Length: 103
Image 1 (tube, rainbow, N blue to C red):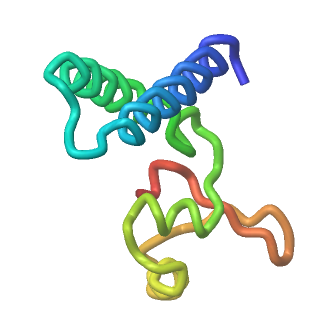
Image 2 (image 1 turned 30 degrees about the vertical axis):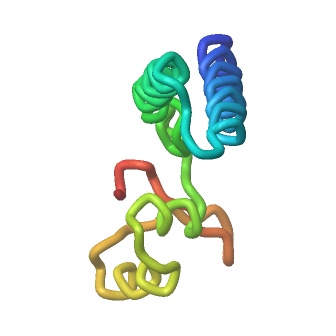
């Protein structure tokens, strides 16, 4: 993993931690200052999420990761493969991975 990807992953983790802190304090509601911070954190997280998502750097995805990305079941991924709609990368007799672009 490159230094920039590591930095993005750390930033994503910190943003998620801070969002969780604000949510736990929310109770009946956040004050306007906290809502402004919450919205800014959510916007920052949304901006870096595509760069930190599985497969964003050309890596191969597992069947579970691809299914999550496509919002379908793993069984549906296998069906689409059988129908020729998806083409996996075979890394061995039983190991199958998917290019991120398959989504």
